Length: 115
Image 1 (cartoon, rainbow, N blue to C red):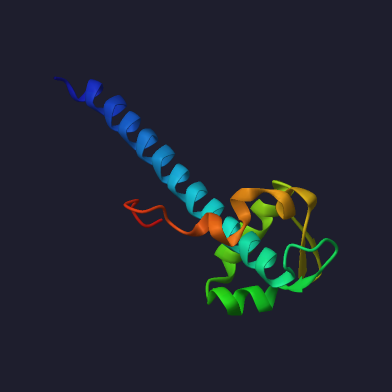
Image 2 (cartoon, one colour):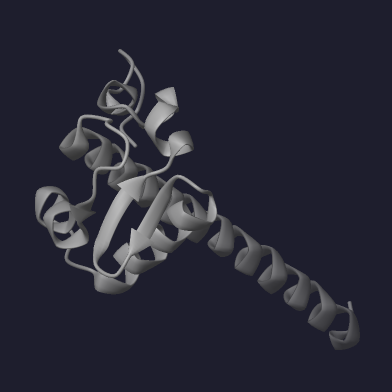
């Protein structure tokens, strides 16, 4: 095979690899966003209009990577799961009522791999 044909194949492999990396990054951001929403739900007992400091959630979840935390909070805000004001968070109706955010939702099913 000529070198001319190898270059596009390598570019295609790189593009597929980049897409897979973006998917993994989005998955990890979403997973962290769900953990933050769940911790907010836990801290506020799922009650409406209850604010919690982001620093409290960071401490509860032992979050050390500020950039990852910021990306996850922004993801949750964009999904309308959380509202943010200054350094505080509160659940939206979607974040407060969705079963997928309650603490029980994060308990793995028997025999399922850890997330």
